[in-house]
Length: 402
Image (tube, rainbow, N blue to C red; front, side):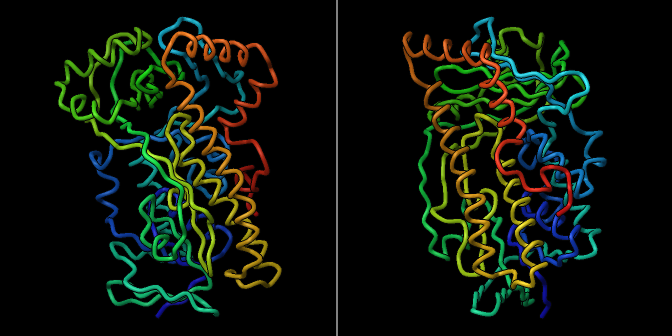
């Protein structure tokens, strides 16, 4: 039996980030995950890339992984938003020398870097591949028995198992959820024109079409939302036909295109947990909330959870409180539930607004985009949201340890 300050179920991007954040503050944790590192860092594992918001990047600096990741990332210094292929775009850009809006990184690079850092961390023990066979959340602590037979004890259990979290379900925490009847086609391609660190979000009637700059200047990630009924057909296209469809939707923004990565398809849905805490239990990341990728905020919501939870636990420990104390969990619940719900509702509403058909709806959207472009306070608000710098920021998201 081994004792820890925190047990983390789930060794994805969010779970590993929490383990590393706690380690930086001297807290011990045990991370349990069913997948081998070699599996989740393989180039063909899922092909996805993430836009790490500038506030999340500050946390990466504070927990010591930004310097390792920087050579693999591409800054996002401008975002252009269009309703269809209209020439006029709502643009969010930063001045020379200012902090970028975010950093684009392949998920496999993120996973590999986080797992390498955690493997070297003094206060983290990895239990990979492994699963929880039994969980006992008692009045005075949590005991987790693993499939391997090992037993872990801690005052607090953190659940970072993703959207289909079995531990959340076993705890009886209800979720609001629905399907968008859409799928995201994920890939990457090379192009003849330099992306100039610009991300493009183009809204078509069947869903948003995002081009996200990758390292090197002439490669971009693609997140193309299609109707669920069309996803099999898109996946079945030859590379040539697929590139022809992508080229048509880019409107020549990036010149000639060629495939640079395999395609994959993921069903899209929304879910939000009714509460994110229970007896000696906390939900973070996709176990707590899952949103449409329309604004690229999904994993960044998880990083906000990490930063807030780390701060709550560190400050609670300084007061001599049990890390599973109901007061601490209530503070985390209050801090994170409203913010995550607001972002979830905003992305859902944005997706529905841009999905409305017809000339009148298109005119309203274009008027709205033009208004945001002209009204500086509105534009500044949306830029702060994109950077993840709005609201009550935990210290890690300000680049500081607690």
